[in-house]
Length: 156
Image (tube, rainbow, N blue to C red):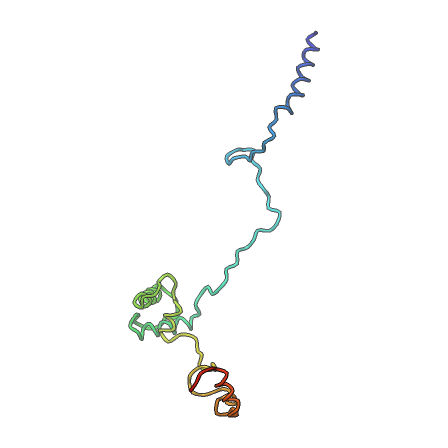
């Protein structure tokens, strides 16, 4: 065998052996390797949308401050800004009521301060006025009223 033939033999043996030595187990590259592939995003990045109320309206802040001043949790005049003094006063008010102090203002605190929702026009507001007088018991025929009593199973 000549030198040229021996060189050709080694070259062919090396080329044939390379696929046989290749690993068939895929291993993900670890961080820090220079040859690690970086994925290019195929779609636009998702934007995280924040839901819910983010700030308190200045008129609402003024009403809260007036109520906290009235209850002696704040002093001075309302500033219409949800500042550190207002937050501290609301935290103190909520803590004094035994309520949570992580979220301010708490809905129970607002109701206690007289700033809850206005349900005065609701059907069950309790002001004595019946918004639908046709359905009041006095306006129902006596046979219908007796039927209601009988159906209820309550004896008088």
